[in-house]
Amino acid sequence: MIVKKNTLLAGLVILFLIAIVLLTNYYGSTDIGDYTDVAKFFANDYSAPIRSSHSYLMGFLLAPFLNFLNSFIIFKLISLIFLGLIVYSVYLISNKNPRALLLILLSPVVWYMAPWASPIQIASLLLLWAYYFIEKYDRYEKIKYLLYSAMLIGLSLAFWDTMIYFGLILAFCYLFNKKFYSFFLFLVFMSIGLLPRLALDQYLFNFPFLTLIKTFVSGFISILNKGIYSGAGYVSYGFLPFLLILLAIPFYYWKLYTPKLFIKNKKAMLFLTLSILLILSNPQIRYTLAIIPIITLLLMKNLRENRINKQIWILLPLLILFFSPVVLQLGYTSASQPYGLDILSLANKADLSSNGLSEKIIQDLDKISVDYPNQTFLVGNNPDDYQILAHYYWGKNINEFVSIQDYQLSLNNQTTIFEKKLSSSSNINDRRQIWIAGGIDKNPNDKTDYNNLTLAIGLGTPIDAEGFNLVKNYSVLYISEKN
Image (cartoon, rainbow, N blue to C red; front, side, top):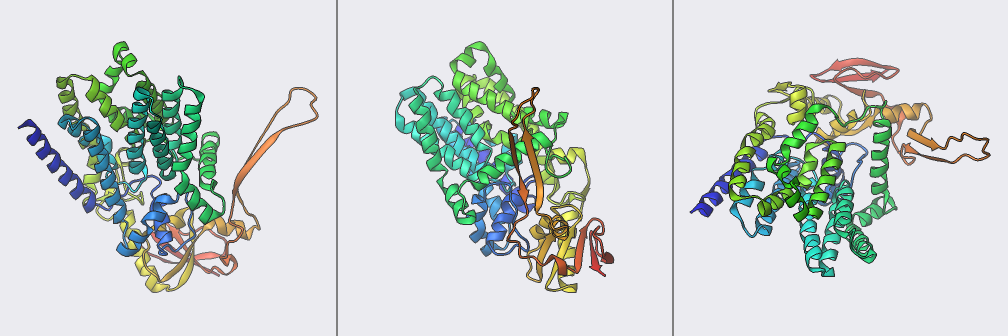
C-alpha cells in the first residue's frame, strides 16, 4: 500500500512539474545563449555570427528539432527527459526503493533545473552512472567497470565542460590506491568517450581541442582578471549564493561526516567533499545537480528509515523556495533581465512585470523588421547585446545583428579583443625572462561590411557610436541612423 501511495504521489508531482515547466517561457538565466543560440545557428535561423564559450555538441544535435519546431521548446523537453532519467536511475540503483524515488524527485535542484536549457542534466546522468560503475570496480576489481565509468565521464565532458573537474576528482578518489595503469586506462577510455566533441570541433574549426582549450583558458582568465570586459566577472560571491547551495544539499548529508559513516564510505565522501569545495569556489546552484543523485544514494544506504522520512519533509519547503520564481513567471517575467529570473536574481532584484523585457524585445523586433526590412543593424551598447536580439528574433526580414565591439575594432583597424601576458620577474641580474601570452581575436575571416553600416539598435538606451543619431524609439529598442 505504501509503495502504491508513493508511486501515485510521484506521478502527480511529475505531472505538475511538467505542466509548469512547459507553460513558462523561462529557460534558465546563465549561459542560455551558449546552447540555445548554437542550435538556432545550425538550424540556419540565427541572424548573427555565433559565439559560444562552451561545447557546441548539444546545440548541434538539437538543431534539426529546432528547425522543425521553430521554438526552443525542445530544450525543455530534453531537460525533463534527462531529469526523469536521473530520478529513475536513482530509483533503480537503490533497488527500487520508493523513498529513494521521493527523495530525489523532491530535491530542490531537480525542480530548479527543470526548465533550464543546459547540458548539465545530461552530464549529471552520465556522472551518476560513472560513479555507479567505478564503485563496482572498486568492489569487484573487474576492469570492464572502470572502462564503462571512464567512457561515461568522457561523454559527459563532451556535453558539459565542468565535468572534467568532477571526472578527474572521481578518478583520483577511487584510483589513488590502485596501480598506475588503472588511472592510465581511465584517461584513455575517457578520451574515447570524448570523441563526439573532438570530431565536431575538427569539423567546425579544423582543430579537435579548440572548445576545450577556449573554455579552460577563459575560466583561468576569469579567475585572474574577473572576466574580459572591463574586469567584470559574472560569478556572484556574496552570502546568498553560498547559502542557497548549502540549502540545496540535503540536511542529513552532513550526518555522513560522523567518523563511522565517513570511514565506511570514505572514497565516495572524499569525492563529494572535494566536489562541494569545487562548487563553492564558483557558487552556482545548477552545479549541485551533478552530486545530488550520488548524495541521495548514500543517504539511502546509511540512514535509518525515520531520518529518510524527515529529510523528505525538509525538502518540501525548500522545493517551494527554489521553484517559486518559475511559477511566478507563468504570468510575470523580469523587467530588466532578458532571460528571466531564478531565485538568486529574484532575491537581488525583484522586478517582475506582466510585460517583461523579453516580451518587449520581441515586440520591438517585429516592428523594426517591418519598418526597416532586410537591413543589417549595429547593436549596442554592451558587446553582447547583439546576441540577445539574435536569440529572440525568429523572422527572416533582418539580415544581421552586428556587435558594437566588432564595429569599433574594425574602425580602429584592430583585431584583439583581449590579451594577457604572464612573465617571470627576476630579483637578480638574469639575462633571460620567460613569458607566456594568450588572448582572443576577432575572426580574421569576418565578411561584415562595417564601413557601410547605416542603422543601429540600442538596447535600453540609444547607441553610443560616432556619427549615429537617434531617429526612432520603440519600447526598449532605439533606432539610430548614421549621418
